[in-house]
Image (cartoon, rainbow, N blue to C red; front, side, top):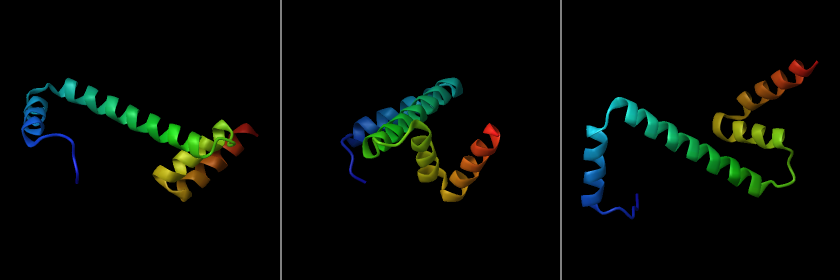
Length: 82
């Protein structure tokens, strides 16, 4: 894997993570996860600008959790409205 971080900087980052409290590490994980979801949703929106918001959400589910899960979510949402 190619990286723009020097080995020395990476070692400092690892040491800082090791020293961080569990609450701090959890906060970092939540922040990184949120950023990844936001970037994925933005990419889907840019690739499929004509899709309605719900369809973009379902495409996100399909890309990240698979077509079977997306079908179940779609069916759930359809039945929930009835």
